[in-house]
Length: 445
Image (tube, one colour):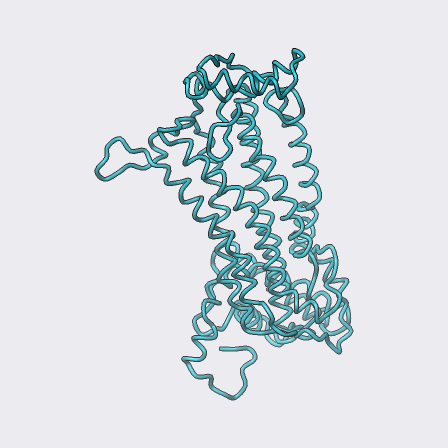
């Protein structure tokens, strides 16, 4: 059943094809659809299109429906097209004529737009919190193992001494930069499209500033045509942001799968966190990190998928946009799973502390020896040549220690500064303000 349906029966095959996965995916939007209607109906009352008595009935029942959704008691009936129709039909059944008035000044287009913006905001907050948890675990490990040396590589050849402090800390700082992209996506999501109607505005005197305030948005999508054009663009920008976090996780997962290998032996995990082989009893496979790597590589393809689905669509709404949910919504869950399992695994990581005692790592310290010669007054080119000859003739015997003190080096990780940068970007999101505003919308009136 469709709210918009006239006296024409839609072919069942056509209807099934056009609805697609909307019912399943729209369950993600149920709660925010109610929030959008709470704000919209208060605005309709404010401009005189919804009497006080009707507003009270509608607001009370919308809040009841919201609570049903939160309890898990809400469903989209098989005969109903989508979540928006389901909620409006439930409201009309329960409060009568007042429920039929709530769509004034609103199109399904801007109703979906505002639902998506609200949903994306909530998903950004969840992703941020999971990223924050992982960030602090990485900083903890960096500080804990700051004096434990490991090989550093270029071209996958042993190069110079590194440390676990540097390794863990590098991924912590990478997440900070990823969060700057997530903040940019948050800024796009935090603009209100409600009131743009079908993309061309309304002849009703809508108060779009009021719905912006009630829903906790920072600002409006002012131009009503652009508000509709923002669908697809918002998803692409958000996909780019989460793909950046995914890229950090995929790179870290690749490191882990290398470093846990017996030919490296830098790290390990308890047996119960790895998987075995059906025929090789010695195997302890890093399946978790292999799946993280693959999942996150899949997420990195998401911006291109969305771009290809939306490229060159002319101005206005197109049904193509419906399919974006099928690509983007599962990616949120997948990324959050990866963030959470990475944090969990790192709580149990075992670090090898005597890696560099192996003679095969002697040459890691060649640069250290060259630098010591330079500090003693030998020109760099002469020191480099001398140590090179010592290596070739088997006379090279380094002291396996380093004395790096500059910012960001083995002896001066600057983790406090990385934490400062994290807190600075965290403060710019304003999650608490948004949540307080939405709580007020649910409790006031």
